Length: 493
Image 1 (cartoon, rainbow, N blue to C red):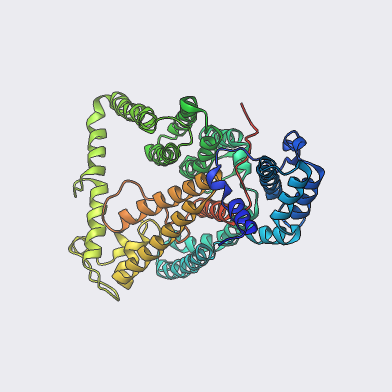
Image 2: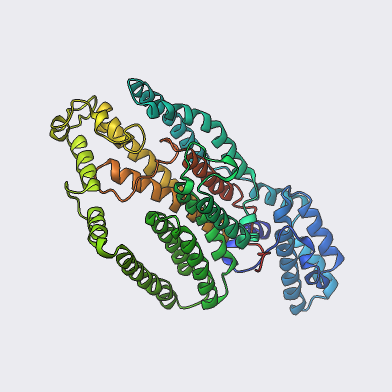
């Protein structure tokens, strides 16, 4: 049987699971000053002695209130049993156990918890990325300047990315929960600036004047910010859902100016996953079926309206637009995307389990070198190329690594005890998962919607830095699993 002290420690440890709707502002210990009027000096001295053993200040306020509530509840029960008030108070405090021992036990519970498995997989992926880029750069030395440059870019971006990951890891991720609307608006304004100035802001992106292509990575960064918007509007019923929908519409309108539909799709799909999860967890305290209908019916109608608008804008060239859509859905050799999918599929079909495979008939009919036909073989289709060079085992190992990473990230997300940590972690899983799915589906000859760099392993400087920040946020949320409780949102505009 558990003693009273052990039950208390267990309850405080898991308290966030049963009270996620309570607003806790750990940075403002005076917030509960009014509540503490009913507590005597003896109980305060006890809680202060307990909290003095806890090193992390963010959790002290929450633990102090839990302890005082326990003492008060225990005292009331004893008074009802006929014990005088002062004696009941002293007995309640004695039942709590030695303050130093309780404090030390709670300090052991509420410590940073690194997720070493994800950190280890990230390190392995970075090492693999270095080896792959070096190998591809040596092959590219025979003629592809861009391929040679890819290794240099990867190596120069790697230390910066590590700094970004560590900064996000040790930073206070709860800033997203305190100022969600300001952060969300700032990212949208950056998107507008990239569109208006075409990447020539302060001579940025001088190597790529069309920096609007970088907006897809801002869309990925928008997902954690949008998750924080959902967090700030929880417990507001249908009004909260409408406010979150308005925030999503604002992002879609801004991203729509990039003239890249896939940017909209990536953000829309990610946003739907996040708001659906929030509704499923009962954040808005409404009927779930009606809430999901409120989200998905306008979304489907908007998609249909957007499709009709595109047809109208194409005018007489609407058949070209329809053929483009058809080429994305139906795999055909007559369309550019369909040809690339079939080409990648034929390369894998003629690959060996280990070692260099045979050239497919599609290659032999054009050239004797795969590098001359496979577009961006050192980047977008690098996995297809490596499967041809090293064997099918390369693809299996890549799939295994990313499957393990995604599963671990999902498990870390499901372990979260506070609402903000959960939604931030889920946004990271969604962003990295969508990138991986798009890259792998194209390289394995499944379908070609759009190709984004494989997180951490293929070149793409902005992509690499964004993904390192995202991983840092997820690791930070898990690191503070037993430290950060739900907090108060500050901005209200």
